[in-house]
Structure formats: C-alpha cells, structure tokens
Amino acid sequence: MSKVKVPTIDLEKAKDDPSQLKLLDIACKDHGFFLLKNHGMQEEIDDMWRMSEWFFHQPREDKLKIIRTKTIPLGYYDRELTKQKRDLKEVFDFMYTKSNGEDLNQWPENKVFRSKMQNFFSKASLVAEETLKLVFLNLSHNVYQLPSGEKSTSNARLNYYPIDDPLEEKTRKDISKLGDMALHHHTDPGILTLLIQDMTGGLQTKSKKSGWIDIEPEENTIVVNLGDAMQVWTNDKYVAAIHRVTKRTATARYSTPYFYNPKRDAVIQPLEQISDEEPIYVPFTWKEYIQGRVDDNYTDLGEEDIQISRFRS
Image (cartoon, rainbow, N blue to C red; front, side, top):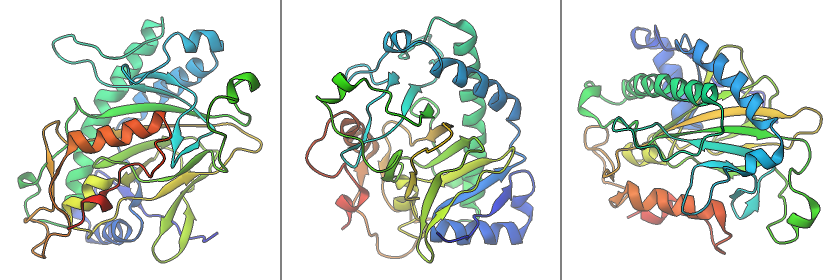
C-alpha cells in the first residue's frame, strides 16, 4: 500500500494561497480527495457523533421501525449493495426538511437526534458550497458563473461499520452474500462529498499514479472527495474519486458523508467556462442518473450500476 498522503487544505486561507491551490489541483487530477481544516463546523460534528453512536446502539427492533424501502428511500438500512456485493455496514439516510414543513425523513422517537441532524445538515450545506467555490478557483476566473449544488437535493448518511455481520443467519439466506470489503469500490454520483470519519482508518482511494492509497484520519478535518458530476463538468480534467472501506478486524468504524448534489432539474454536461476542448460526454439529467444509482442499492440488477461512462460521446 502506497504511503502517499492526500493534501490538507485550509478552507479559510487557501483561496489566497497559490501553493495550497496547486496541491488541491494536483489531488483533484490524480485521485479526487483532499482534507479540509478550519471548516467552521466542529460543534455540529461533535453533536452528530454523539447522536450517531446513540442511534446505532439502539436495540435492533427499534432501528427496524424506520427501515427504508424502495418507496421510502430514507431511514435505516443494513443490507446495501455496492457493485452487486453486500457491504458490511449499517446506515441511516436523511435529507433536509423543506421550508414548507414537508419532511420525507423517517426519524427515531428522539427529538434531540432530529434537531442535531438537521443542524449538521444545514452547516454542511454551507461548507459544501464554499468548498466547491474553492475547487472551481483552479478552473475558472469567475466561480459565480459556474453551477452550484442544491440543499434540497443533497443528502447525508450516518455509517456504522461493525466487525460482524449485523444480520441474523436465517435472514442472510435470502439476500446477497457479504463481499470482501466493508464498502466496495465506487464513485459518488454528485458534485462532491464532505465525509467526517473517525480515527479508526480503513478508507482508501485509487490514485492514477500510486494505486490504492490510505486516507489517513486527521483530527478536526473533513475528508472531501469529488463525484461524477464534477468529473463531467470538468470534461475529465478532474476525476470522481474511486474509494472503498476495508473490513473491520478489531474496532468498529463510524463515518458520516454529506453528499452535495446538483439541482433537481440540472442537465449534467461539460462546462464551456472550464474546458474549451471537445465535450467527452453527451448531456444527461441528474434525475435519471441518481435514480439509476439508488435502484442498484436495493437489488442486484445483474449489471453494473449506472456510470458516467455510459454517457461518453
């Protein structure tokens, strides 16, 4: 395993520091990962960690009360598939409650949990917007002319990676077997992901130059990785991060990603403001793309989940 380190970028200072922007540019071209410090949301992260640990240590029957389904894609789940292989993890998915009061989430009966998750989501949305502008600085003189994400289409997830299979043996007979990873290799479909990971380790990304490298935990930082939409927007100048999580052998792992996604009606295509080269991709809608990725989380469809390579011209 290569000892290459991904760069740590200062969100407050990097925009005025050419050396940090250069490191950011190199990382985005090679593997799509960097760490973010001075992000301004440590209080929300600390609250989130306490609530995440509480949630996953509830009795199993309580978690199953809010299990997600194809028609209700938010809530608890313990048998997600990646690359048609079952991951060794439990998750809780949630989105932001809309201003009109509409709430698509399934919440446990703990009002503090709900409040802390919503606070975390709101702050992460702001940090994601600022992080995107920082990434764009290496690509365009006017970041405000470029598209942004949308709070209402973004989502967050609490992850718990146990040592042992959370499913009872009688339940395992009817579903896909566990693969050889806690989370199998994949890219995220959206623009970028803010990932808060604990100090356990196990997250890896695939570098063009060095193969699989560790994303080593660093106190009080956020891990950022680019998604498929960013790779298409940049016409392959920047890469969607291929990443995975190795199986736990001694200590369970917690992590929480915030997935910053395009606007609901967005058409994803290479941006003229970023690349004057011939477009590598034909336009496609965010709605159709994300639906294809969601469908594969539930059922082995017998083929690779939808990838941006499908839209290469």
